[in-house]
Length: 305
View 1: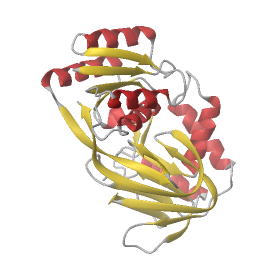
View 2: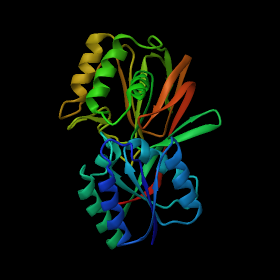
View 3: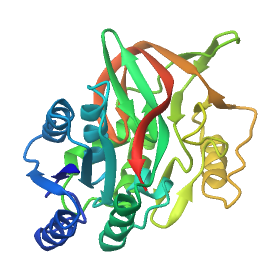
View 4: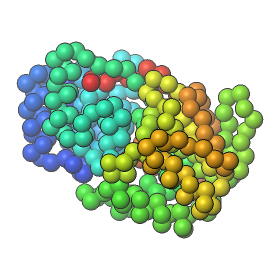
């Protein structure tokens, strides 16, 4: 088996020693090449080249951004290689949703066992499209508030990135939104357009994210084997937001409310805005858009597990 290990050395929990241990362990089972990324988009380019060359397995060692780039690179080929994931970031939402250990050494053990036993599972993905461009996402995407938070974190990004940094910037962004409160229209199959929405979170699995060890549930019925989940509020007044946050971090994750538009297992979601609003996919800021369509892509990728 031919494999490529793509490592982001800037990810929060990656170290040269950890990279070497992982590379040595993988090299005992497969014919391995190791690539360290040094610019944005490098992981995507490396994965696309691996797919073009017929590599069997591409392992992403880094955070969710690294995984997202690798996934998008793999899917440039009709015969995408299998994906392996060894967490190396601060949140590692995709890896944790798959049931992988947060510890890189333990996750490496799971990956090696999967390789030895030829074990994998197929997962569905989401895809965000605007104009002629698109981007796959593994666990979530969003328009509005969460994308503004991602933009704020990007300005402070470094080795100290943590869920608590996201929480602080989320509060600051809520109190002083960069573009005010957007006016969104949301279209769902078989429904009349929903007008006057203030933000749109789209999930490909649940939990939507994590606050330290605590999962954040927005669409508890959302899985890698089904369609997309939508979570949107028609107001960002404090009582509504406080209630939503309280429900999101509860153990049941039972989201409800008069100001809430929530759907599970939908094939597509279209979001349009009067003025450009920010878009994020898997915690990566894409830019500002006025029209985005989110679609479910079933059985998009094989993952070694």
